[in-house]
Length: 249
Image 1 (cartoon, rainbow, N blue to C red):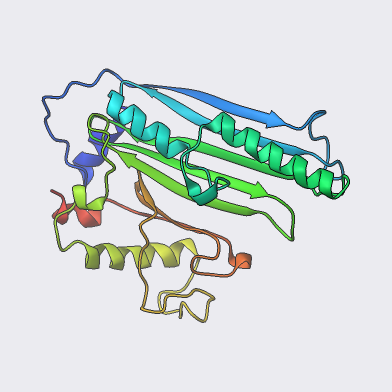
Image 2: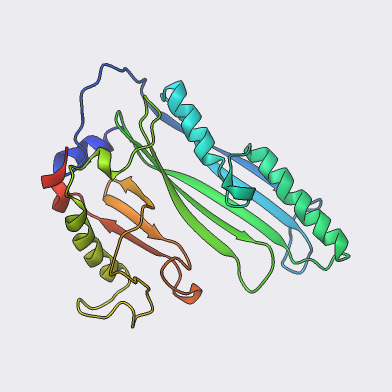
């Protein structure tokens, strides 16, 4: 994993900078928190609740970076105001909420589930980028899903953005390439009207701030309902680094 970012730097964007801060070699260990109601969940017809969060432990980070990452990973969408809560505590709350409602409706509650998985996209001396996908169902016609990203410096623990890697003036170029990538991801013709295709961009196409850095490029995700109705689902696109090489810091 440590070799991925230098390759990306070489071909386009993320300039690898010398630093006097020494970070130990990185390694990744996957951990999880899993909880279910007594008896587990054997089928949709059985009242039950399940909670599963899979997340990485990245060794070699500074204490500041470890703290930033732990806090970011604990921001689950099922928590009130999306505030950081210990993962085990989040699971206990989720099960307790289901139990309370299930008892109120005398066992007629639909099965509840929440699952989240955090995947390391890049880890290097200058950047750690992690993708977090989650799905939850608490009754109704369908569940909800969400993708978010965590980008941080492995030494300072600071959250990183595109402004940390690109010089001012990059946005028009990024947006232009982003529109091409969006059309490709949604299989739209170059001249096809976005609104007619079901996508809402009142001020013209714009990228959001929900992105991470992968070996292939800058990965953006528009979550369900963000720019389109549920039936169209989320949109994920990747912008290659090469077209932005002229703007790298």
